[in-house]
Image 1: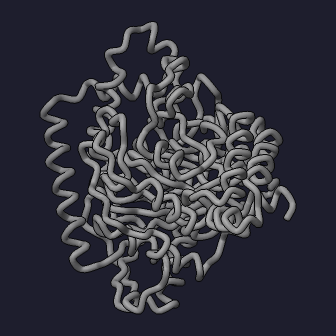
Image 2: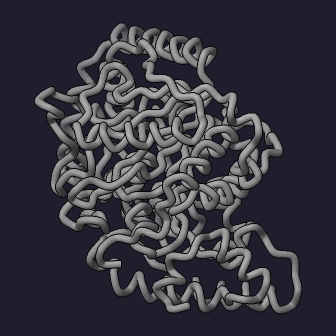
Image 3: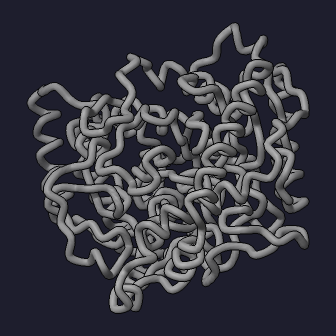
Length: 471
């Protein structure tokens, strides 16, 4: 196997081959680091690379294999960490010049779990400042580029991690999702991104102002790689007051088909009843939904009655940004993303009454979704309304001639508010070669069914062998 093929080998296969002594962690890590050195300057995926440390960890991992020691689930497998997740002793910047020298005192729960599993940290990946938007660039490290078309964004806020995985600069990445930040880049980069049930993967420190919507998430090229990561990171941690107790779920086993699948009721919604979706994106996602129906799953076209919840996002998400940044002194604002500053200052004009109205509306939306899922087991939608857009913009201002608000070009954020598991998988590619994602949503705590449906679709429409043009 040449180095390029090795870099596009799944984490499940890498971990298994290491255990069988067919592949060496040293061989794998060297190949990934070589590819990072070759391509990262063009893609801007990593902001910090631990080359020497990673190679030493790989040598240690190889020695443990040869001595027959107990091995963790990701022993010897390279992984990247988003630059807003604490890693003890490593500079963690949140993509901000205000945090350029911050070094956290301890690992975040997901980072600690990956470390304990034997994964090899190869570096930290780029994000927009304080993870605030769905495209990735900042004034500290610059922009990340989409491997499928480097003139376009990989999405955000886990854009650097997605660019890395899509280009073979590591098989798996750890990211986060507060309003779509794992599913947006998964859709734009042709990957699998899972936002699990809220609380299933603990988060610490809390995402200020987003404590009830932020999730720590895996992103990878295959459903089973995401499931393998979940087996590692879905572990209770008392530092997170919202963390769920361990449920003992084997996420890999959950990907296997079940005789009960034939009775699963799926609702297909091309727009969630409120969004403007570009025709090609809609057609690709519709074809994907029809493929599930053609394979024997019960699929009806129906949307939950959510109205247009964009104002809820603008109020609650914008209010959190206002609380974090609007009162910063001018000298700090001068160092920040001017779009973030403007967004926070505009949201600072909201009142407490505005906020409470949005809280009530959010709960009504959650109740609507709960009732909808009394009739359906899964909801399938396009992940986004558009394919990857050009670099240099926060996001589209219009879709199909309709004005859209911040993140109003996504179909992701309602499920951050409801806490439901939602996964984005590749539905297909546009005529220009850009990926389009399909979002599969389940009831709270039913992550296993979401993974099983995603794995079934992957079997129907396999995508992992497809690589970006320059890969």
